[in-house]
Image 1 (tube, one colour):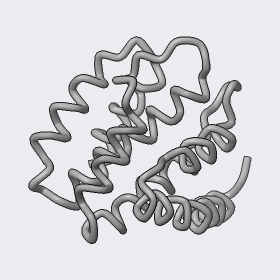
Image 2: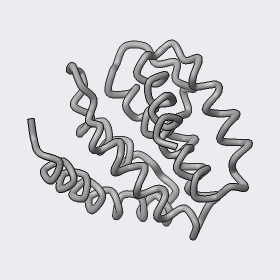
Image 3: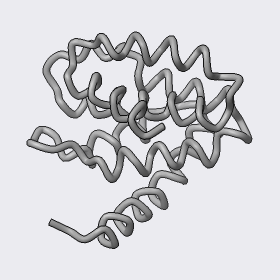
Image 4: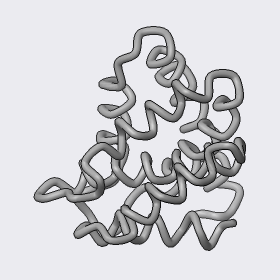
Length: 143
């Protein structure tokens, strides 16, 4: 198991890789590359999702959402578009988890999104996907 420094380094590295993907989405409006990156780096299928990437994604959303809040909200909703009802592919559920974390990150950075984010998170807390439910629990335990 890695040290805290190793994990922080991984998270920072993911953050650097995510930044241009998110910027591309903001300029072109297509989340495909963000989605592909998250899926490829999810560590799923497997016993443990890539929590460092999940954290890095939330941090990236928190840092950037003040400049274009509506675009970041739209990205978060697109990633979580299945409302957590994921069947089959665990990698797809990781993308939903990232959407959940993004919604909470926007809510934390921009209080005017509080009621909308809370309503969405409540929905995801009833997902059939246990990883999605766990991501909702994670964002509430972190606050």
